[in-house]
Image 1 (spheres, rainbow, N blue to C red):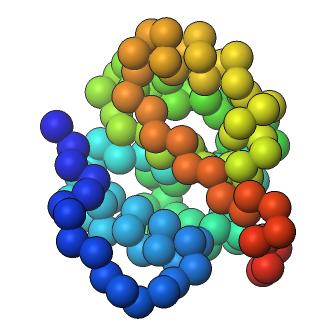
Image 2: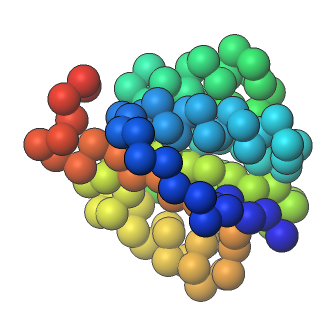
Image 3: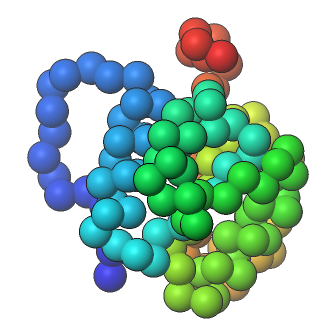
Amino acid sequence: MLNLYNGAQKKDEMEMRKVYSSKLAELMEKHNEIIALEADLMNAITTNKVQDKYPERVINCGIMEANMVGVAAGMSIAGKYPFAHTFTAFASRRCFDQLFMSGAYQKNNIKIIASDAGVTAVHN
């Protein structure tokens, strides 16, 4: 079982993109099963730096969120731990059916990371 949260909280404030990419790299170092999937947003969330270190485990699926969820479902079935990232609006609407049918209904272990929820998208 992959435990992503150990209960410790830091009080330092950081942008989500920096927290996500640094934590993802840390987890990927410890767990070879982790695969990062991106919807053409690697520069926005700074996973391009993670790809430099793990080029075979960071995959840009392009601007095809529903397809990315299908890829994540297949990877989950194959024993991988996929982390799929896109903007919040696309994660919650564009790929909802795929999330339900290939993710939740099939009980696949998929992590959806949704960033830039609207007015908070300062850097993009």
